[in-house]
Length: 194
Image (cartoon, rainbow, N blue to C red; front, side):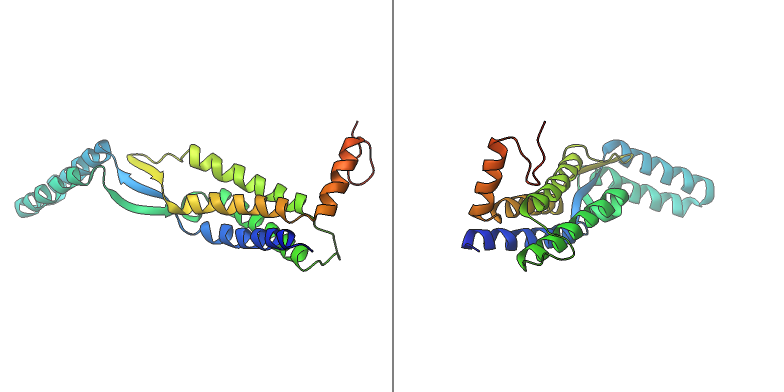
């Protein structure tokens, strides 16, 4: 196995492990919108007027002024696991598939099934599409604004590593054989492409 092939396989294993960890890291920074701050202040004032005495109402007025100051500032972070329940499970399954497949590929284990770089790259590409979807289309949360945090970028880079590792991990001989089969219209299992 060439050095590039070995490096590609190690890259795919590492990328899959980092993808699994990134699901639990901060994907989104949470900020409260000005409308959310105004609503929170109004609800707090309403509760104080309904249930509190004059001292409580005065204290609520003091606390309520800090809500408008909090608008636009980061108040929390959310991981994919916390916010994207279904997607986080799918990403964990894809990370596990890529990790186990790349590990088998790295160790050159061919039983019970043979794994190659194209399969690893395909799993990484699917994970990459899911991550990109949630990077572009943020989930909506009422009165809160979500912006990308470093965990989402780490997930993106780990998916790229899986794809790159799958493509780099193929040996030069595998690349030549695949290219020759493609030039005559055959898939790698001998079936016609038509």
